[in-house]
Image: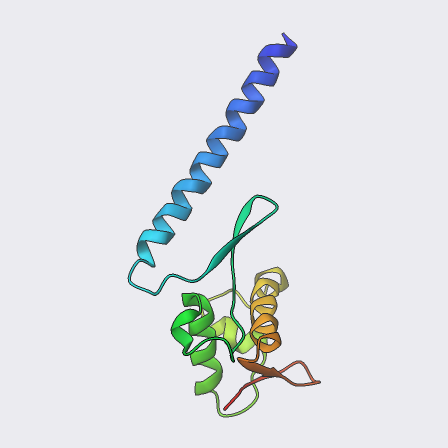
Length: 127
């Protein structure tokens, strides 16, 4: 009986993995028009690399969601909070967990020289 439960659990895991792969494939097809960002493998998983600003000739080297973040920050009248960018992206800004991945992306853009992160946590575009 335990072997059947083990098999059922593995089958369930495979079904979940298949759904995730299908979603990723759909996302890849949707982004096919954009330039393909450089990717690498970390712990067996593919991850996108965000190039340093000095290494990239243009923003086209960035993944699409990072380019959208840059546009929103540039359009702002001044320093912008993560919450404001999240609202423009259509995220539920009332749920902190929805903003943390965005904060990580914006921090990565700042670390790579695309944005400037101020001491108060707000972001500005680099000229």
